[in-house]
Amino acid sequence: MSIFIESGYGPYELAQLNRCRLYHQVFFISDVASANGKQIEDIYRTKERNLSRRSSWQWPQQGEPDRPGWLLWDRALTYLERHGKLRVPLGEWIAKSHQACTFLRRLWQGDRKDK
Figure 1 (cartoon, rainbow, N blue to C red):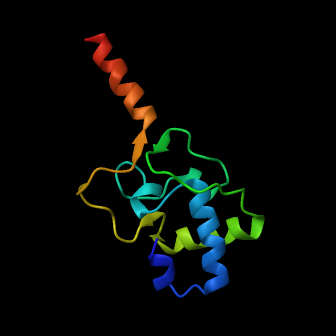
Figure 2: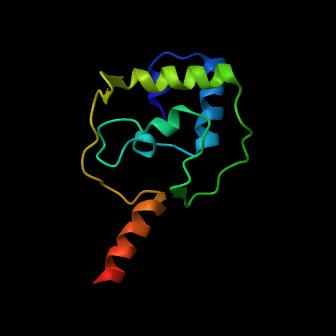
């Protein structure tokens, strides 16, 4: 998330943010955004992993970041928002995501089985 570099975070802070990013296995703002692209999913502000989204990429092992790291991560995500919404809402998808939303897939497959 190059936005953190552009936001003026220093090397130590960027290392902390990177630990949180790797822990959540996110790379793009769209990876932490809601399905409608208008806000950040609350789960990404915490140390809880989002089990309904799975990445197809190979990620390095990352232990759980410490509390100061999570506080910085939350502050950095808040920078992307204004009044609880992304400052710049995401537009249409332009490429396939590395994340698969298993929750929505299960719903969709369930709908298809009923028909």
